[in-house]
Image (cartoon, rainbow, N blue to C red; front, side, top):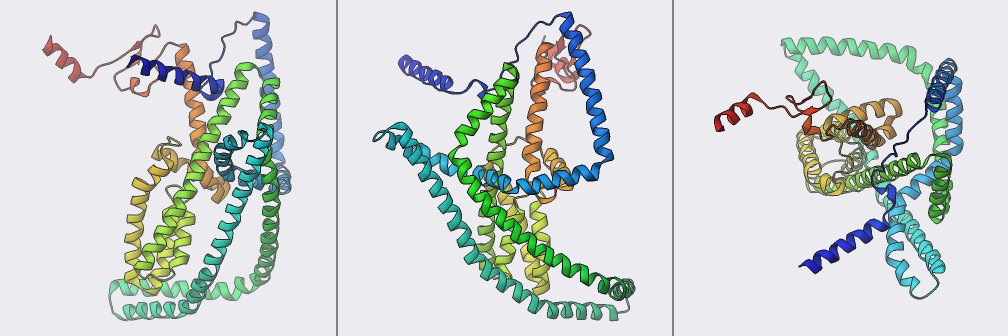
Length: 452
């Protein structure tokens, strides 16, 4: 038994030796500072604050010009940004091939040559997977989506007419609700007719030009994606070299403690974003497939179209299911009101299964964000950056929260105060001497007195 424990300890020590120092939270080195250095640091801090305020002031005065310049830079950099995003998503496949194929090849040839062949095989496999996936989705989805949209456009006028007739029959009854609805519909119809006569005809030229611009933008985005795919190949080939350059520059221009902290946060960011985004994509694909199978069994209309909407919007945490379910429910209700009710019940059940079974199994606790943090971050991210902001809001919030807690724990440790959250309950406090006092409730004190 003792030999087994010794062996396990040795293995743990070997694993810790192979991990980088910054894999776990590094410690800042305490350095004594002279009076001259303290005054110099304060002076530099004041200068930096003043310069920052001046720059922000002029940036706000020229906000449109700054936003235009940033937008132009982003447009130029889109192929590179797409390339990094594609490489980030395909990296797990390349990494897995390196882990499995690399050791086999190293036994038969030089390590450097084996590494190159293993990396080439991994990238080719990842690209083939991506191309096959896109081709399969296009071949399966586009014809079915076209059929669903065509059927919807053909059936929608009749469905609207039927809904209008049902409303008209309801209005013919002399009830208070019928009179209220009738007046509201008359006012809405009048407003709509005025809008068609005045604004709609004048906006047709703008609408046509916007459609043309939209087609051009779509073609441009497809071209950027193709260039991004090429860039991702080079990124995947040279990712170790990029990492070494980044680490070299970090140690060169930062102090040792700050450099280790930056590298630690970089590693933590990759862990949070990678685990969340890739896990959420897998989770959404599973939800889309389950939705398609169940809707097919239930013989719902627009099965594939609704499944795609539900699967894509499920990438957005918390609000995604509602964003996808509302338009889908409206489409189904127009075709069959009872099936619409069944669909709403099905979506509620599906999201409960996803939130309590599928999601936790795939994502685990990759972010550690509370329900309030999820809602808060999605509202802010969606308001600032739209759909993309809603996707990256949760991992960004999780990283910011992690940094804040790390700084907070560091300051508490300097004051010799506990860092665990449970130590700061209603009855605990810190006295005037800076000593932590674990408070007790009246019930606990009463119970202790009775026992004594």
